[in-house]
Image (cartoon, rainbow, N blue to C red; front, side, top):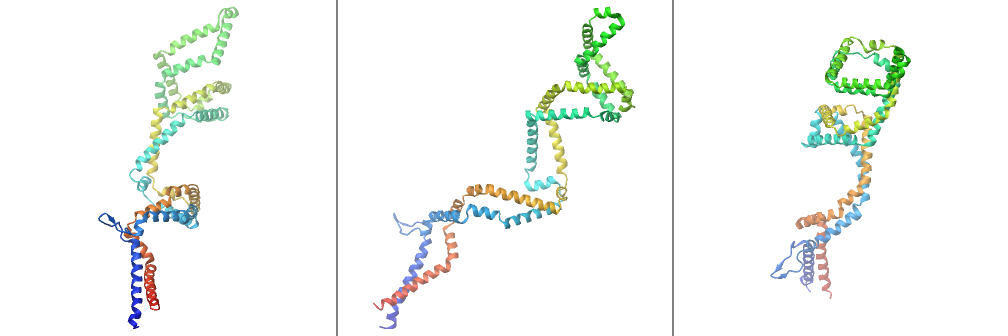
Length: 425
């Protein structure tokens, strides 16, 4: 047997082995779509990978999601030292940049948030105002505020230095004008309080005793026995009410008060207070305290009602809106570095650790939910499904090019060996 006859089966076997393996590898990817001849489907079309791409994607997704990118691994990685250190560096760099930033705060926030920043601020202001107005309707808060106000008044009227405070108050010209303008509008209010004073049980009892004493001293016991102080006082109240309810009389009373204030405007309240006898001042303070104690419950209920009315008042709403808007404008015009320039390195370190602590807590508490929401197996599966078949082929070949070529040449080698073996059969 010649050498050619000896090698021919080996060469043919090598060729067949090479072509077979090369074709098998190609059939993994080609053709990309199903082929038909008439109504007959061509066997082995499409290729194995295009045909089973959905199943392959599902299997790969499940493997990665359940065994590689697990919930525990992701949380551990996201809270690990490298991420913490990177977060600290970002915070330090961010604060350092802000300490040098000279633009107004509103411009800076607009750059961060966008054009809708101003609308967000206005909505935020509105929410704050609504929250305040709503809280004023809260019975618990109403009671707390009323109790606090009454307690503060009690503390003040019990202080011995209250008289000294009054002594040091001066009547300035501007204050005098404001008082005069205010009094000119308070005719009905003055009439109401005059009536209220003379209807008060304490005042009523004192005046009745005074009338009884005057009658007894001036007219004798017999006349005092015949004259009823209660009737005299009621008659006095009737005449007083008729007098103070007339508008011209209210104006006269207010004019008298204004004239008195003008005459005494060059005097301090200290000077006026010195003109009052010590015993009368002490009696007045004591009676004031007693009167406050007597009316405490009524004052408490009145305060609660007043606070409740504040919660529905358009005036309060507008005032809050104006005040918040004013504060916002003042704040927003300040340069950014004003907010951050006083932060020392120790403060930056505290901020870093606090942010890292909050971040770690957030990831550990909500990380599992986030991973489940992401659904990594489904995410990987959908991503693989979205790949074009040609792209998938290119990716696999770029990874396993050498191995696939080795398989192809292994087929040729096996064919060559089989051809040699045939010569011995």
